[in-house]
Length: 440
Image 1 (cartoon, helix red, strand yellow):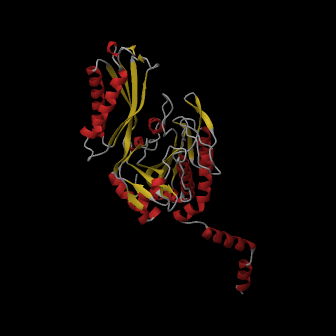
Image 2 (image 1 turned 90 degrees about the vertical axis):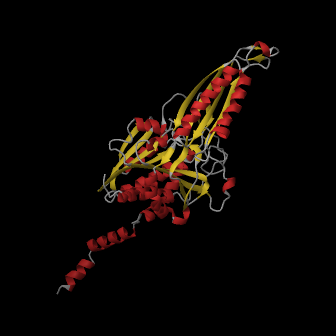
Image 3 (image 1 turned 45 degrees about the vertical axis):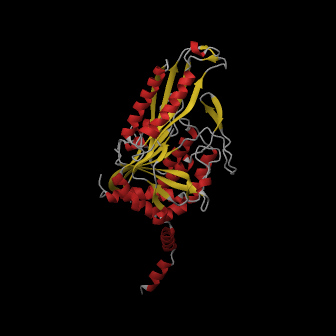
């Protein structure tokens, strides 16, 4: 007697709809790996759109709008105008846990692209009074795309997400133009690490010489601090035919340049950490037959140890002023800090290595050496334990020694495995919460 009603129910449209819905739910990606693989085409599409529409530091207006619009569609709390053009989004998970921040940078560089790809940049923009070509010559387009992908996956898992996730889409990592403020330092100054207070912050950078699918990290000091120095030398002007009547600031400058190299070669304990002193600009004079009154040297100092950094600053000032004085001139030295040492908290790094290995495969994760390039991600690490990692963008099987360097017209990355970055971001959120006991 019960069979007929049961048969009618099984064959009813409502039952069939329910069965179809359950089947559809079962066919949906259920793990982070599956979700990352499913969203990869979209991530690649975003990356290529951003690559074709690059914007310079502190001018990322359309990029910020693109990011904010997508994050709002995901139902996140979105704040715009942070550090001029930055975007901060907040996802409040359904489970108790810590506050984790994930960061991507958005700005491009004044570089003309030579790579012949369908999404090649032809954009030109104003920079320091000049019209310049603009290119994503450092991979920030891929960073934005990966973090957008992670945001979409985590938003889809909101009920399972532990604690709170803050997404930082940061402008001006390459440095704000002129005397403007910008970048991570301004993001921190304007409170991105507070309300709610961040317990740990993670970031990553794609590398043209690391093969796709690979992750690299370094515990402790990872990337160098970057300080820019200016040495103003004042001599005495005279006719070029009568140098004995003047004090030649060009000759003084040459002596200072040569002496500065001994800070590295003869005074720094390079077994402890690297030091680099580079003079990249030397300006003096207006005519071949005039010994000028002034000369200006400008350059950069890169260090990976706080004590060595201060020692290098002191010696650079002392050498410059002493040499100038000994030659009858005077020198004034100013040093402007661009970034601090990017420091990966050793305890946090050790805690998260299994996460990196699970995201990329144990055989694709390795520790690397120091990097004398700089990253303003370092400022977040002053406020909370931080971990910054590299992800590969070199085509599989390619010769890494021939990979075009970052910041060059031929810079190129293979975006076919950006899913590794997406799932790494997501796994870091869950695994950090698990490692600290799911507590704030």
